[in-house]
Length: 100
Image 1 (cartoon, one colour):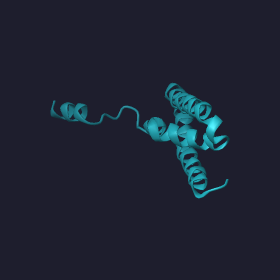
Image 2 (image 1 turned 180 degrees about the vertical axis):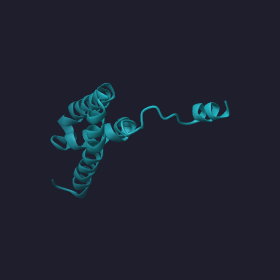
Image 3 (image 1 turned 30 degrees about the vertical axis):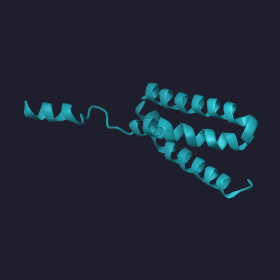
Image 4 (image 1 turned 90 degrees about the horizontal axis):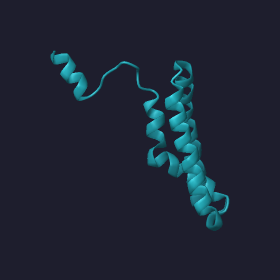
């Protein structure tokens, strides 16, 4: 890649894809495939849309922009949710349950 920003985009893509790897493995082991499919579909279609829109201007760098955009705008959160412990209540629901 030519230019410093392209290297930052490539580095960001490497980070996002490696961060998503562990939740994918955990989801496969737990057989929570529906949530994994939702996260994977969001990432895939987000990358496609951004890449197709930006490709005429940025060419192959558009793919790196798409990967970063898909994860920044929610992909990382969907993969993070795959690490949640099943049956564990959090937030206000957990506090209300403890009071009973």
